[in-house]
Image (cartoon, rainbow, N blue to C red; front, top):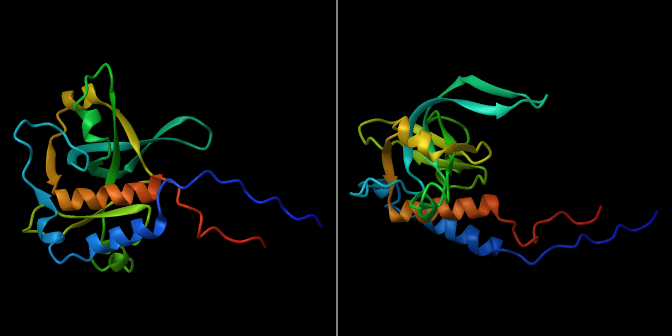
Length: 191
């Protein structure tokens, strides 16, 4: 039996331990959920992390390669993932925006403690923006949707909530953890 050649890795894009520590520190702050949202920018611009009310079906490509729709998901709210700077550029330069669906989560769900402490790398917990209710949402980073910004403006998908600076730092850190490649220290060893 020949020994497998080591996998060549590019240099790390971030330090996994530092990022995990930063997410843990932000999630452990006592004031996080009390100040998760802030007031909307007065100019009405969209920002990364805005919650948009957009009752829409979830589009996807099925296993045969055909366009399909998961109409039964009943998605009403979406989390805007595009960079704020891209959302402020001319439409001819950046014509599209990225959204991920927000799913209602039962407060008694077994993974709620992990969600609320941001331990899960593919999902981002979003408390409900109306303090009078007890709804909970999860943004699923594995289900991105690209939308034309002109169409988004035309159908008037108003932001219903805007992240505070603290929660935006947390979202950004969780996005980096999900999208960027870690430094490999937790890769499985040779069998």
